[in-house]
Image 1 (cartoon, rainbow over the protein chains, first blue to last red):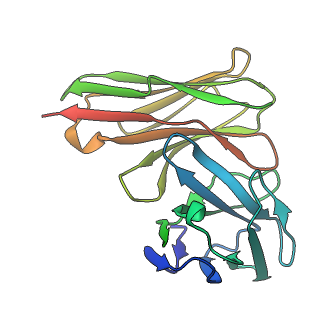
Image 2 (image 1 turned 90 degrees about the vertical axis):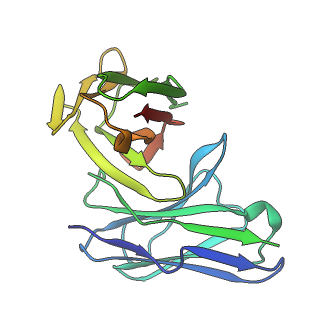
Length: 113
Length: 110
C-alpha cells in the first residue's frame, strides 16, 4: 500500500514563527502536492512538484514556499506564520504525468496564535 | 475556469438504503476522476479512480460511473451502513493537478 506520512497531526505555532510541514511518501511517486482545507472553501492547491528540485505554484502560494531535495520528501514552509494560515494542511502524491491516482497523508491541523 | 460541484451538500439516510452522490464538472477534457472519503479531522482515503476512457468502476458496495460528455459522475453506495458516515469528495484530473468538489456530508442513521 502507498503510504504518505505527514510529520505532525497537530501543531500550534506563534505568529511570526517559521513553520516547516514535512511529507514523506514511500512509493517512488514523481508528483507531490500540498493543499489546505478550510470550511466552506474546500481543498485549495498551494504548491506541487513533478520532480526533485521542481516546484510549481498552485492557486494560493502567497505566504508559503516549498522544498523538494529528495524524491520522497516534500516540505511546506510558512516563512512567517500568520493567524489566517490556521488550517488543515494535506499532502498528496501520485505517479506519472498526467498524474494518476492520488494518495493523501493524514493531515496536519495547524493553529497559529 | 474548471469547476467541480457536488450535490447534495449533505444527506441523511437510514441504514440499509441505497444512495447516489453526484459530481459535476464544467470542462469535459479530463484525464480521470477520483472519489475520496474523508472522516472528520482526517486525511482523504481513495475509494475509486475512473479513467476518462472508462464508464464505471466498482469496489465492494461502491460503484462509480462517469459520463464525460455531460460532465457528470455518480457514486452509488449500496446497502448503506453507519460506518459509511463521512464526507465524500470527487476530484477531477485535468492533467496538471486535481480540482476538488466541495464534498457531500453523509450521515447513515442506525
